[in-house]
Length: 114
Length: 110
Image (cartoon, rainbow over the protein chains, first blue to last red):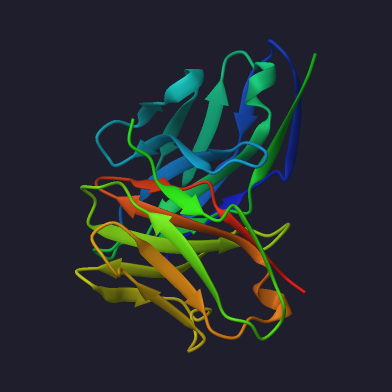
Protein backbone atom coordinates (compact mmCIF):
# COMPACT_ATOMS: atom_id res chain seq x y z
CA UNK A 1 0.00 0.00 0.00
CA UNK A 2 1.09 3.52 -0.69
CA UNK A 3 1.97 5.93 2.11
CA UNK A 4 3.73 9.21 2.67
CA UNK A 5 5.62 10.52 5.66
CA UNK A 6 6.02 14.20 6.29
CA UNK A 7 9.09 14.64 8.40
CA UNK A 8 8.23 17.94 10.06
CA UNK A 9 4.95 18.88 11.72
CA UNK A 10 5.95 22.56 11.81
CA UNK A 11 8.43 24.62 9.81
CA UNK A 12 9.18 28.26 10.63
CA UNK A 13 10.89 30.60 8.19
CA UNK A 14 11.35 34.31 7.79
CA UNK A 15 9.83 36.14 4.88
CA UNK A 16 12.22 36.13 1.93
CA UNK A 17 14.11 32.99 3.02
CA UNK A 18 13.90 29.58 1.33
CA UNK A 19 11.26 27.02 2.21
CA UNK A 20 11.87 23.27 2.43
CA UNK A 21 9.06 20.89 3.37
CA UNK A 22 10.12 17.27 3.45
CA UNK A 23 8.19 14.23 2.31
CA UNK A 24 9.15 10.59 1.87
CA UNK A 25 6.93 8.11 0.12
CA UNK A 26 6.44 4.38 0.05
CA UNK A 27 4.93 2.74 -2.98
CA UNK A 28 5.10 -0.62 -4.69
CA UNK A 29 4.64 1.03 -8.05
CA UNK A 30 5.80 4.19 -9.72
CA UNK A 31 3.78 6.67 -7.70
CA UNK A 32 1.74 9.71 -8.53
CA UNK A 33 2.63 12.32 -5.92
CA UNK A 34 1.04 15.63 -5.07
CA UNK A 35 1.38 18.57 -2.78
CA UNK A 36 -1.81 20.22 -1.57
CA UNK A 37 -2.08 23.39 0.49
CA UNK A 38 -4.78 24.28 2.97
CA UNK A 39 -5.11 27.86 4.10
CA UNK A 40 -7.02 28.52 7.33
CA UNK A 41 -10.74 27.82 6.91
CA UNK A 42 -10.23 27.02 3.25
CA UNK A 43 -10.36 23.88 1.16
CA UNK A 44 -7.47 21.88 -0.26
CA UNK A 45 -5.73 23.41 -3.24
CA UNK A 46 -3.45 21.48 -5.56
CA UNK A 47 0.04 23.01 -5.66
CA UNK A 48 1.71 20.56 -8.00
CA UNK A 49 1.81 16.94 -9.09
CA UNK A 50 4.35 14.38 -10.24
CA UNK A 51 3.28 11.69 -12.67
CA UNK A 52 6.63 10.46 -14.04
CA UNK A 53 7.01 12.93 -16.90
CA UNK A 54 9.76 15.04 -15.28
CA UNK A 55 11.49 14.70 -11.92
CA UNK A 56 11.45 18.43 -11.21
CA UNK A 57 7.89 19.65 -11.03
CA UNK A 58 6.89 23.28 -10.97
CA UNK A 59 3.69 24.35 -9.31
CA UNK A 60 1.75 27.45 -8.52
CA UNK A 61 2.98 30.40 -6.46
CA UNK A 62 6.66 29.65 -7.11
CA UNK A 63 6.71 26.22 -5.46
CA UNK A 64 8.47 23.25 -6.95
CA UNK A 65 9.23 19.69 -5.92
CA UNK A 66 11.81 17.16 -6.99
CA UNK A 67 11.09 13.46 -7.25
CA UNK A 68 14.10 11.40 -6.15
CA UNK A 69 13.50 7.71 -6.57
CA UNK A 70 16.80 6.71 -4.95
CA UNK A 71 15.81 8.58 -1.80
CA UNK A 72 12.05 7.93 -2.08
CA UNK A 73 11.57 11.63 -1.50
CA UNK A 74 9.39 14.38 -2.90
CA UNK A 75 10.40 17.53 -1.04
CA UNK A 76 8.64 20.82 -1.64
CA UNK A 77 10.72 23.98 -2.01
CA UNK A 78 10.35 27.66 -2.67
CA UNK A 79 13.27 30.08 -3.06
CA UNK A 80 11.70 32.93 -1.11
CA UNK A 81 8.84 32.68 1.36
CA UNK A 82 5.99 35.15 1.37
CA UNK A 83 3.68 35.86 4.27
CA UNK A 84 0.78 34.48 2.25
CA UNK A 85 2.51 31.08 2.12
CA UNK A 86 1.64 30.45 5.76
CA UNK A 87 -0.64 27.41 5.63
CA UNK A 88 -0.81 23.65 6.11
CA UNK A 89 0.89 21.61 3.39
CA UNK A 90 0.04 18.00 2.63
CA UNK A 91 2.14 15.52 0.72
CA UNK A 92 -0.16 13.06 -0.99
CA UNK A 93 0.22 9.83 -2.94
CA UNK A 94 -2.39 8.43 -5.25
CA UNK A 95 -3.38 4.81 -5.03
CA UNK A 96 -2.57 2.63 -7.98
CA UNK A 97 -6.17 1.57 -8.48
CA UNK A 98 -8.17 3.08 -11.30
CA UNK A 99 -10.20 5.23 -8.96
CA UNK A 100 -7.13 6.86 -7.49
CA UNK A 101 -8.02 7.54 -3.89
CA UNK A 102 -5.56 9.93 -2.31
CA UNK A 103 -3.50 9.00 0.73
CA UNK A 104 -2.47 12.05 2.74
CA UNK A 105 0.49 12.70 4.96
CA UNK A 106 0.01 14.20 8.37
CA UNK A 107 0.73 17.71 7.14
CA UNK A 108 3.35 20.37 7.79
CA UNK A 109 2.33 23.74 9.12
CA UNK A 110 4.42 26.48 7.57
CA UNK A 111 4.84 29.59 9.69
CA UNK A 112 6.26 32.71 8.03
CA UNK A 113 7.48 35.57 10.18
CA UNK A 114 8.13 39.12 8.98
CA UNK B 1 -12.76 28.80 -13.13
CA UNK B 2 -15.04 25.88 -12.25
CA UNK B 3 -14.97 24.77 -8.63
CA UNK B 4 -16.45 22.20 -6.31
CA UNK B 5 -18.97 23.66 -3.89
CA UNK B 6 -20.25 22.25 -0.62
CA UNK B 7 -23.18 23.10 1.62
CA UNK B 8 -23.59 23.83 4.41
CA UNK B 9 -20.25 25.24 5.49
CA UNK B 10 -20.99 24.30 9.09
CA UNK B 11 -23.55 21.84 10.45
CA UNK B 12 -24.29 21.27 14.11
CA UNK B 13 -26.36 18.24 15.01
CA UNK B 14 -27.25 16.15 18.01
CA UNK B 15 -25.95 12.65 18.46
CA UNK B 16 -28.25 10.12 16.80
CA UNK B 17 -29.59 12.53 14.21
CA UNK B 18 -29.26 12.07 10.48
CA UNK B 19 -27.28 14.57 8.45
CA UNK B 20 -26.86 15.07 4.73
CA UNK B 21 -23.83 16.87 3.40
CA UNK B 22 -24.14 18.22 -0.09
CA UNK B 23 -21.63 18.74 -2.84
CA UNK B 24 -21.81 20.05 -6.37
CA UNK B 25 -18.87 18.62 -8.31
CA UNK B 26 -17.34 20.23 -11.38
CA UNK B 27 -19.78 19.58 -14.18
CA UNK B 28 -17.79 17.42 -16.59
CA UNK B 29 -16.11 15.28 -13.94
CA UNK B 30 -17.05 11.63 -13.63
CA UNK B 31 -15.30 10.53 -10.43
CA UNK B 32 -16.39 11.74 -7.02
CA UNK B 33 -14.95 11.33 -3.56
CA UNK B 34 -15.56 12.09 0.09
CA UNK B 35 -12.77 12.58 2.59
CA UNK B 36 -12.82 13.67 6.18
CA UNK B 37 -10.39 15.38 8.52
CA UNK B 38 -10.88 15.07 12.25
CA UNK B 39 -9.49 18.10 14.04
CA UNK B 40 -5.73 17.81 14.38
CA UNK B 41 -5.53 14.64 12.28
CA UNK B 42 -4.77 13.93 8.67
CA UNK B 43 -7.22 13.84 5.81
CA UNK B 44 -8.71 10.36 5.38
CA UNK B 45 -10.38 8.80 2.37
CA UNK B 46 -13.97 7.70 2.89
CA UNK B 47 -15.43 6.67 -0.45
CA UNK B 48 -15.15 7.01 -4.20
CA UNK B 49 -18.09 6.97 -6.60
CA UNK B 50 -18.25 6.38 -10.32
CA UNK B 51 -21.00 5.52 -12.75
CA UNK B 52 -23.64 5.79 -10.02
CA UNK B 53 -22.06 3.29 -7.71
CA UNK B 54 -19.43 3.09 -5.01
CA UNK B 55 -16.10 2.08 -6.50
CA UNK B 56 -14.10 1.92 -3.29
CA UNK B 57 -14.69 2.61 0.39
CA UNK B 58 -12.57 2.70 3.50
CA UNK B 59 -13.08 0.91 6.79
CA UNK B 60 -14.48 4.15 8.17
CA UNK B 61 -17.34 4.05 5.67
CA UNK B 62 -19.58 1.66 7.56
CA UNK B 63 -23.31 1.04 7.30
CA UNK B 64 -24.20 4.38 8.82
CA UNK B 65 -22.75 6.16 5.80
CA UNK B 66 -24.22 6.33 2.33
CA UNK B 67 -23.61 8.35 -0.82
CA UNK B 68 -25.90 9.29 -3.60
CA UNK B 69 -25.97 11.27 -6.79
CA UNK B 70 -29.67 12.10 -6.83
CA UNK B 71 -29.52 14.19 -9.99
CA UNK B 72 -27.02 15.31 -12.57
CA UNK B 73 -25.34 17.86 -10.36
CA UNK B 74 -25.43 16.96 -6.65
CA UNK B 75 -23.41 14.39 -4.75
CA UNK B 76 -24.43 13.75 -1.17
CA UNK B 77 -23.02 12.04 1.90
CA UNK B 78 -25.57 10.85 4.45
CA UNK B 79 -24.77 9.85 7.99
CA UNK B 80 -27.79 8.03 9.38
CA UNK B 81 -27.20 8.22 13.11
CA UNK B 82 -24.40 10.57 14.00
CA UNK B 83 -21.91 9.86 16.75
CA UNK B 84 -19.64 12.23 18.61
CA UNK B 85 -16.66 10.83 16.74
CA UNK B 86 -18.20 11.84 13.41
CA UNK B 87 -17.32 15.43 14.23
CA UNK B 88 -14.90 16.43 11.49
CA UNK B 89 -14.40 18.48 8.36
CA UNK B 90 -15.82 16.63 5.38
CA UNK B 91 -14.38 17.34 1.96
CA UNK B 92 -15.92 16.46 -1.36
CA UNK B 93 -13.72 16.11 -4.43
CA UNK B 94 -14.26 15.48 -8.10
CA UNK B 95 -11.74 14.41 -10.69
CA UNK B 96 -10.79 14.67 -14.29
CA UNK B 97 -6.98 14.21 -14.28
CA UNK B 98 -6.55 15.38 -10.72
CA UNK B 99 -8.86 15.77 -7.77
CA UNK B 100 -10.35 19.16 -7.02
CA UNK B 101 -11.61 19.70 -3.53
CA UNK B 102 -14.47 21.71 -2.19
CA UNK B 103 -14.10 24.04 0.80
CA UNK B 104 -15.47 21.45 3.21
CA UNK B 105 -18.36 21.12 5.64
CA UNK B 106 -17.52 21.28 9.30
CA UNK B 107 -19.77 18.80 11.11
CA UNK B 108 -20.12 19.19 14.86
CA UNK B 109 -21.98 16.45 16.72
CA UNK B 110 -23.06 17.36 20.25
